[in-house]
Structure formats: structure tokens, C-alpha cells
Amino acid sequence: MVHCPGLEAALRLVKFFVYAGLFGLGVLAGVALLIRVSLFGSGTSVPHVSGLTREQAEWETQRAKLAFRVQEERYDLRMEKGRVISQSPAPGMSVRKGMTLSVVVSRGIDRLEVPDLRGLRLEAAQIQAQQTGLTPASASYVHSAAPASTVVAQTLAPGAAVPRDQEIGLLVSLGPSSPTFVMPDLRGMDLDQATAGLQEYGILVASARTVALPGVGRNTIVDQEPRPGFPLDRRNVVHLSVSRP
Image (tube, rainbow, N blue to C red; front, top):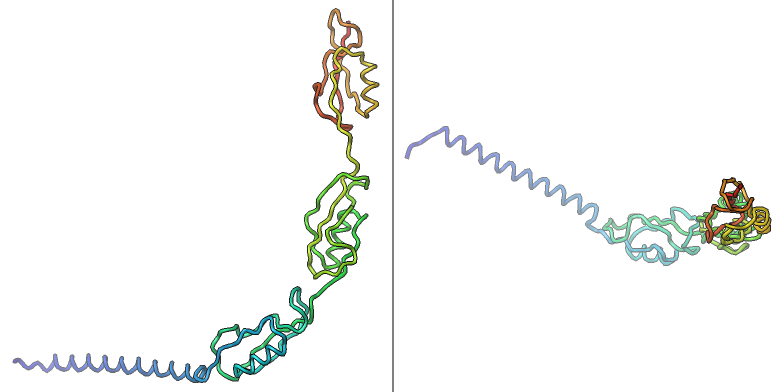
């Protein structure tokens, strides 16, 4: 067998680096284990205390070998007075025994009195609702005897106690509704007679165009717009064509 000093030296160098690498990995693993043991070696699981009363939450915290601290007390939209709204750390986390569990406790449900918005114009009612602490919903509309744009009803009863930011719906008047008529067939009628009949229902004849038609009596209606049978109300106007011999 041929003896090669250079090859043996190279092999020894490779072995050195391999052993050094393994040693380094072992050191890192040991350090990680040491850190984990120092933090969680005598660890515990954070209990779920949200929704519990303050006394129940404190008892559960002490049972898990943790310190208990009320970080803040504030009003809440849903949680009753004295119950835990939130906690930190989160439930289920593994932490070192003796660490502090901080909680936020409810001072009660924040309620307010609903104002009476009926009779106000829509814009004023929405502003007052927002200033009170309510959230105006999209308005609904209905014809009524009340002036247009006036609130005639609301979804929350005036004087009721409701949570802050509760949504309130408003029913707004469109004003009195206009009667609807069916356009009669005026062709062949006298212009003055037809005009007087339409005016009784509040319908205005906007124009009467004359056309020359031999054999047709003077001021006789020969055409009309809208056509017979068309639904119309007092907002519509009528245009007529009248014969002129």
C-alpha cells in the first residue's frame, strides 16, 4: 500500500471540521434547551378567563400559578359589569409560572336614551341621532300628510335605553300622494269642454295645436298626448291637436 502523507493530512482536516461542526450543533441545541427550560421549564398554560367575572378570572389565574392584574376598566357594548372583556396573554399559551395575566374588565354596558326624532327634517334627525351616539340606517320613504322630508316614524322607541352605536331606522314622508287617473279618450270632444273636465282633476292642458281638417268641426280634438288609457296624475300635462276648418 502506498503511503501518502498529503492525503492523510487532508483526511484529518476533514474529520476535524466534521467533529467541530457536530460540536457546534450540540452547543446550539444545548443553548436552545437552556433557554426553553429557563422560560418554560416550570411553565403553565394560560387559562381562558374572557367572559368570567373578575373574581372567577382571578381564581383561575391563581390556580394556573400566574399573577393577576386588571389593566383597565371600561364600558362595553355587550359585556355585563364586572366581567372580563379581554386578556393578555391569549388563552392556551405556555408561559413561565409567576408571569402576569392582564385583563380588561367591563364597567357595564354603555347605554343611552333614544331621542324623539319624529317631526324633524331628515338631515336634522340624522345629525341628532349621531350626536346622541346612535347610527342612522338608510331611510325609508312613504306618502303621508306630513310635509315632504319629515320623519314620521323611527325603529327605536323614544326614551328607550339602548347600547351606544345602535342602528336606528327612519321613515320619511314624501308628502301627500297625488291621485292617479286614467287618461280619457278626448278625440271628437270640444276643446273647451275637455279642458274644463281635465281642470276639475287638476290636469293642465299645456298646448292645443291647430290642424286643418276639412269636414271636422272647429275646436274639435283630433289627437292627444298622452294616449288614451295612460296613467297620469297632477304632475302630468296634456297636449292636444284641434281642428281648424
